[in-house]
Image 1: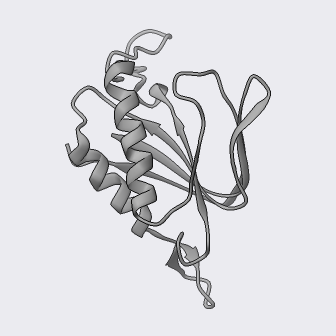
Image 2: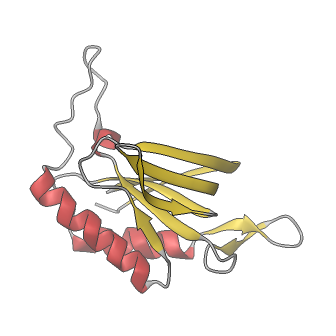
Image 3: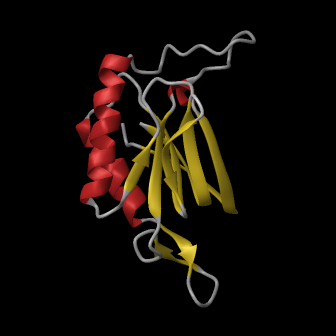
Length: 147
């Protein structure tokens, strides 16, 4: 499992011009799932993201978690995170999980984040989406599962 996390101010995702999820501040998560990912991978990544300290304290050090600053999550499925560009000019997506494997794990991931006490907004799995965000910092982190 691979997640690109961007610390964000206002962010929204739209499908066909309609907002499906939006936050005032928090993390925009671009979520990629591969064939071998399991609920164990999801558990690890959700717990890691919930506990990361990526927000500044009074001394300007990244010492606060998303929960401590009242941030929310905007979760967007993105199979292209497993695009392989080693050969040719067109990426291969063979490492991206098929939708029947990826969608249940993405939904499970969003539930696990909610169980960590975070409010989660989402895009729509498999849809063409427009994502807008104000990248705060900028702070961008890649979080991957152990397997």
